[in-house]
Image (cartoon, rainbow, N blue to C red; front, side):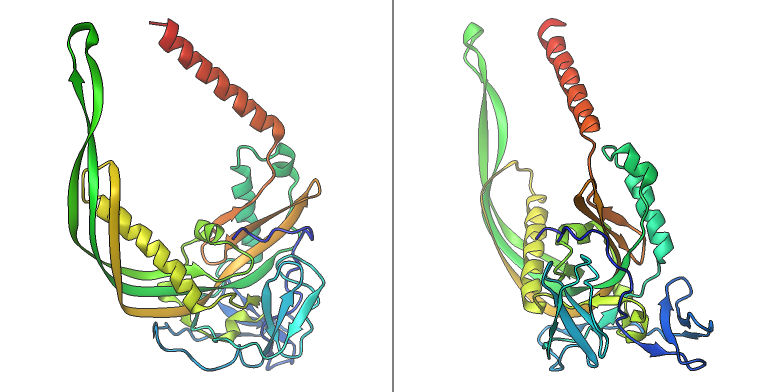
Length: 361
């Protein structure tokens, strides 16, 4: 899945608040402030600390029967497909991901309430600075973009993901090969021949996977999610909607079973590479791996992400900032002049190397 870049440009920040908490002093809405870790009132300045409780995993076979977050309603964007959760009674007029003003209400959407939440620790202003530092390091980004780019609007969104713990036992058997060279013939007829020494392997490989994290978003791809990871999911808090005051949350797209299939693909690739690293081989005839997954556990975690979409010369781009660490990744325009110069320089270097090996000796 590619990131859902669209033609609507910038994202509207905090158009609707995911969770409404009223101030005890003046009755105004309170929002969560990442730097202090409190909810505070923008009207009178009153603040309230949120108790943090570390969460534990659930057994994989356990499925709560509750409906999607009690007291909230879901809206699907007809433009980008993202499903966002708002407080009951609020009107979602704009999608927080793409800025499209065509969200559609979804009644009584079944689902699981998050197990855990990682609160925002990076403020909106700090996230802008993280992006500006990131874009300045992109060699091919246009110079004018680096000098003049400003982030006017951003959305703080809790992205849904699943973490999986499992003890794996993998039994394998296969046929691997190691290449080697021999010289055959004599005199002018001598030449080198490459051969393969084949050998069979079998055994057992055991490994524990802890908090393997799979995104379940309609908007951000696993590739982009991995680029801004890691999130400290091992120290996530028990889900408390107070952390979401003033922010938005996306509802998960596929669910735990589909995401565990993706986790299995990651595990299988990891296990396969680890098995091959046991042997001195550079050829694989075949390698059959049968993995058993024991003691499976999961968490449904929402993680903090700052999201911005913008346009440069009428083309859409977007970026993501890890709301816990500030790690940044996104798409950006590339200067044709800089790309062309790099290609030309590469051709000159290649031509020089060819000349050196053919004529320089």
